Length: 523
Image (tube, rainbow, N blue to C red; front, side, top):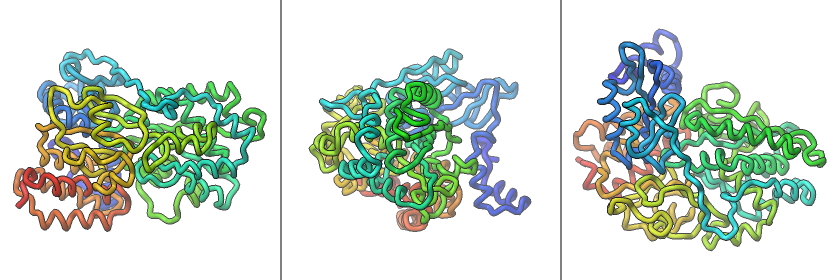
């Protein structure tokens, strides 16, 4: 094992040889269960090493905890009293850095001192704010959209309304939700499923967390509407283990909904029945990918499968399955209640509707905001979030998660919309906006992102499993980076990886190469 107590490549090869299992399988198992393999003390401290926490301290909080506890990450004290581990991401990016100490999550100024003193407190959730006159995602769920759909709409007409609204997925790819629903509705088979993906753990994004915990009934309504349109009688919500408050909030909301007759058998006397199961994920970033998510739901290890077949044709338990991001489904009640025209009218941008964006701790007014598409990134950062605190200047932003490109300060007039961000090598993604101020080392940022990518690889395909480790090593050893070799490695990841984790991780590195080559130590 290495200094952190984690299996090395030589260990994995030895295990593979002795067990007869393929090395890829052994590597994937070790990565997926890495946290379980780490020795746990009676008090288990997990320090967040997500991108927002990195932006806040440059990982100084991790070093302070290591020094204060006298432990390396992955170690347990000799008396078994305390252990220290990494985690990504706790979802308190508005108040970074964050630490989970047992069942409590603490964040913000003084968190390290409180943890070392054994006085951890429960961090406060951000209250979402809407800039729209008629909020879509920050208005409390009322079930009115479902009532209207069940009384006035057929499943086919509801599906057509969602297609007319041009609702695009909010989880990363931006695929049209209505088209995905149509594929599942047309697929053969009486039993179909809807799955709300709340296990997409982009470091720096906490939008799904806020929706699941502050407005769970809106998500459940959207899930039921999707079931009605597709012809599914059962839905699942998969939450993140790093968000311990999400599952109880959803379970309580589902219990209330069943008591009120808006979930369960024969909803509102319509003849439509829809049941919901809430499941907590196993703590893997790659489980945010839909085939890995469905594998996890079936009790299998959450690794990616080749497509086709797509889940809409053959998904959960071999049945047609729609997998939508939490925020995507939360848009549906508004469309069902007010119609596609009203939804399209919300945005002056090319993309209809509204979007939740979240800002990290570097901003004066961090938090979650509902905004129309089409605003400039500069307006979002300066007018909405108030610019950076402490008089610092924005050096760069990462918008949409760790697979998104890095937007330099010179491009802040780019509009927040799918096409314009894509033209800059960036993405809407989950809508997280993580700012790096003028003190940030871009080489350290590259090292941070590649460490995350390597640690979270499921291990199924070797370009991602090996390539991300090798890329991280190029930035981690302090030596000049061989530019030609790095370019070859990034191209291999892009074209040969099985899923977007491996093929997407080169995007931020290519942005850094384009905009900050002088800081990367290139040979």
